[in-house]
Length: 111
Image 1 (cartoon, rainbow, N blue to C red):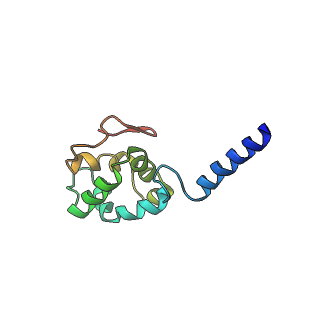
Image 2 (cartoon, one colour):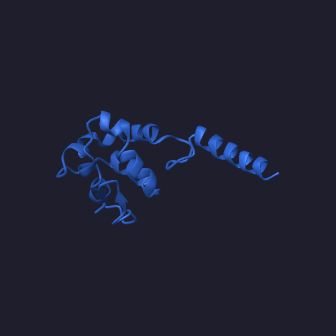
Image 3 (cartoon, rainbow, N blue to C red):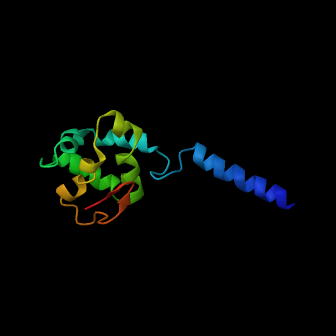
């Protein structure tokens, strides 16, 4: 009986992963990264002021620090030439009061 329960548990776990249950819920971090298209210029220049559409997207994604981190380190972000050390500063530059300050994101920490 015990092997059957373990097998069923593994099936549920694999099914959850197969349906995209991850840091960003059902959407993959790569798919969510596309929502940050308005942030491309802010991710290139750490001195620039992000646009309001960028800040809106970052605020929505930033409700989940693990999703925000996964997005900033995603393959889509890398392919777009996004520098994580610059992207990680966008929530602060958007004046997000509820940003995940000090949250460790790979090799980076959100300021």
